Image 1 (cartoon, helix red, strand yellow):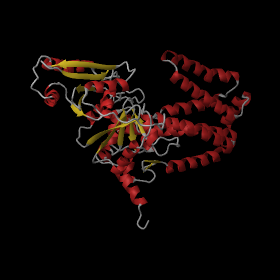
Image 2 (image 1 turned 90 degrees about the vertical axis):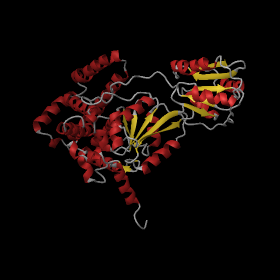
Image 3 (image 1 turned 45 degrees about the horizontal axis):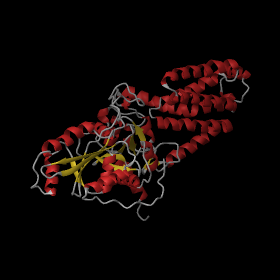
Image 4 (image 1 turned 135 degrees about the horizontal axis):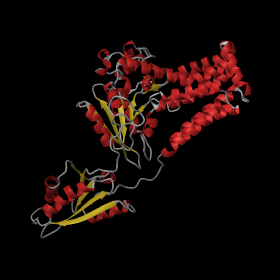
Length: 511
């Protein structure tokens, strides 16, 4: 992210009534822009009226411009006698009865005109008129709607967000056909002028949180926004914490479901990832699969995810604590087997464990970053290196490989990559604590971890809600979810109740 640098602002150019002056200004501001298209037209008999049609190639729909802007002008006005028409009358007639498009906006502000051109709109200039016509002709090269690659499910909708914000808005509107469903568009970034859409349901959202989010977005001062992570990091209040306080997803059904619960969604033009806030820790363990299967099966899978999260964080640390500080707690036959495996290992247990953990992380990253044709080769080579070769060489014990493998695989069972990354980082802190203090070190680190989680807030909503503060009625969709007919959150919002209770707590009488 590039911070905005201080610079002297140039005086804003004022739209002129002279067409040549306006064209000269555009050519000066968009100098060396090879995609700039300027078409000048003269129409009418016997006196000519001068027009200019301006757009950028590639991000404007050229077929629409030719068929519904240029052709109607030439067809209607090329040979029409317009001597008796005043220039302003001609402009009004052009605006109201010429173009075959859905939206035409008159505009006189030069900055808005330039922003429209750079955004893909077509601008029609008319000589001797101090206004232009903005025609929506945005286009561009975008992916079609495809199945989600990062959050796959067995049953349920297969569509996902794309880089086109218009497409993403339509995917949400298709699911929530309610006049109270609002989508507010804002622009962020001095250089990029990136469109950002704030989505919410008016009668369910907490307007205190909504106003806070709007204020934070308006206060963003950066040169450019290229991905939704820019917005996420700029509006969250716990940027130093490894735990995300904004839910990121590429699934429109996830965003829609959270909007129905009173949360706020954010879409960023050019990013296939939508944001949901406020986000609490339990939300990162809820997968769409939980709601598209029978609730008994969904509950089992969800509990399995919670277990996988704890396994990712604690399993390696507990194993290290037992074999280094608490060997009497290990059954004798297993202890003898572990001692026999470690007899030829030249490294201390903590060094052995850290070597394996780092090797696993390297293989994971290499398989992600490698070209697809090489990803399988990297995985095979990594498996041979970690599995067979290191054991035969006597560097690593077999039990250590099993523990690291289970711990690593468990991280893949967590549905959101952002919280899985947090667990991966936290695992090393627990390993170091186990190496220093054994189970006592793990218990102390676990206590610090809980204190940290309890201290985090996501837009004034406690991160551990509804566990802390405890809310009995919100337990219906926490560790397990009730059958759908017993869940009130389908039609009622939880977020306003949570934040309202917090405000009442913070505004006690006499304070």
